[in-house]
Image (cartoon, rainbow, N blue to C red):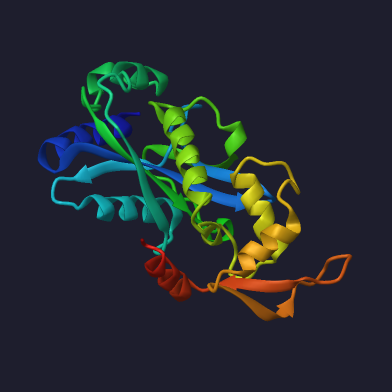
Amino acid sequence: MEKFITVLQDIKTLFNRSLSELSIDCVVFGFHDEQLKVLLLRAKGSDSWMLPGGWILKTEHLEDAAYRILKERTGLDSIFLQQFYTFGANNRYNGKEIMARLGLPQEHNFFPERAVSVGYYALVEYSLVEPQMDFMTEECHWWDVQDVPELLFDHNEIVSKALKALRKQFDHEALGFNLLPEKFTLIELQRLYETILGLEKDKLDRRNFQKKMLSYSFLERLEERKTGGAHKAPYLYRFNPEKYADYLRENES
């Protein structure tokens, strides 16, 4: 505990010198076993969970800070990142209550009285992520988005708004490829869409869904099939990011 308190004192000093009172909170989404997952951290010495996030350096650009924080938590350099909301209520959280939940002495409270946080959501391929902890946390774990516990701060609200923003954007942009492995089947793609949009399995008409997906130039069929199934092996597909960039430019208007 003594060493940890020394770290808290160092944080307070760092605030005065280098950190702004603007923070970033990141909702990291992954897709595994037909479930949408969110990456959460458990605070050291506590049963309380929270989102990955951090403070922005006074000399740091906003997006640079977001990518830095995500790399520290996932180990990934290339991440789809989308800013979705700014949380600026003057009563977002009570620093004293947070310190109490963490079991830390009130005199070492390092939370500012007022903090504005910029929310980002990230879409990552589940299998590539290597969850990382820091000195404030002792567990980094994927949770089903439907089973997220009561989080610290206002992080439950942040997760809720991130999911709404993802569904809204997902409905008119081809974002799902960021959550899938490099090669996938159309059935896997359909399951992803149904999960993100909160639909029951097979709710989307398979023929219409596949017709729509195959109309996109950035979806490429490979000359190989997925093996291991009981039925006829389906073809594998992959996403072409260059063609997708061309598609976005052509449809900007």
